[in-house]
Amino acid sequence: MKKETIAPYLFLLPAIVGLGMFKLYPVLSGLRQSFYAPAFLQASETFIGLKNYISLFTDPVFWSSLKISLLFNLFVNPIQIFLAFMLALLLNSKLKHIGIFRGIHFVPVAVSIPTACILWNIMLSPEQGVVNSVLVGLGLEPQPFLTGSKQALASIIGIATWKGVGYWAIFLLAGLQEVPESLYEASSMDGASRFEQFKQVTFPMMKRSLTFVAVSVTVSNFLLFSPMYILTQGGPEHSTNVLMLESYNSAFLYSDTGRASAIVIILLLMTLCIVALQFKFLKAKH
Image 1 (cartoon, rainbow, N blue to C red):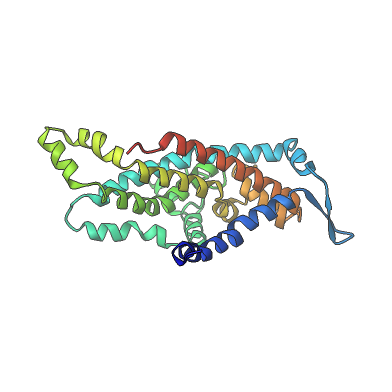
Image 2 (image 1 turned 90 degrees about the horizontal axis):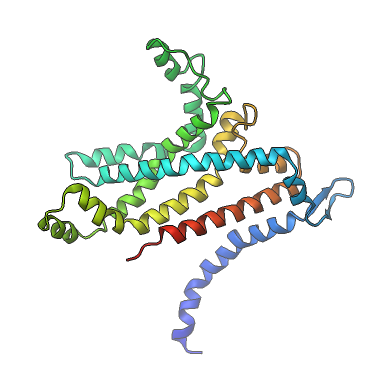
C-alpha cells in the first residue's frame, strides 16, 4: 500500500482510538450492564436478560422521571436557542464598546455549575434570598422557587438558561460572522429592509450553525442533572427528578447498576431519535 494511502489513516488513528475508548466502549459496557443484576452475596452479577427494562416500564417513578425529562427539554431547549440567537445578533452588532459587553456576557459560562448552583440557591432562598427580598420590597409575596413543587423545575430551567445561553451564543456569533457582507450589500441595493435581510439572508445562512447548536443543546440538556442534584435532590415531590438523576441514584444510592444502565440506554436511544429528527428538519439546503 502506498504511503499516501496509509498517511490519512495514521493521522486519524489517535482520534479513532480515543473515540472507541471514551465513547463507544462506555456505551457497549452500559448496554451489557443493563442485562445484569448485582448479586451481593456472591459478589458477582447475574444475567437477567430484559428484566431491568421490563421492570422500568412498570415503574411509576421511571415514567415520572421520563415525563419530567421531556418537560424540562421541551422548554429549556427552545428558550436557550432563541435567547442565544438573539444574544449572538446583539454581540455581532457594530456598537460602541461592544468588546466590553462580549466579555461580560461570558461571565456565566466561566462560572462552574456547582458554584452557579450555590450562588442561585442563596439568591433564591425563601428566607434571606435577594430575589425574595426584592419581591417583598415591591409588596409581593415571597416565592418558594426551589422548595415548591410547582416552581422548582421552572427555576432550574431559568438557572440552566442563564448558564448556557452565553456559551451557545459564541457558536452562533461565529456563524453570523461567516455570512458574506456582499449578500447584505446586494439585498440593500434591492431595497430590502432589515427584517427582510434577516429573513432572506441571515436566517437561511445560519441554518448549519443553528442545527449544530440545536443538537448540542438537546444532548447537553438531556444529560444534565447536576443542578437537580445540588439544588433539589430531585424534589420536592420528585418534581425535578429527571432520568439522569434517577440513573445516578440507582447506581450510587441503591447500588443497582443494571437499572441505572438500562435508564441510560433508554435515554441514549431517545436522544438519538430526537437528534435524527432535528437533522432531518433543520438540514441546510445550501
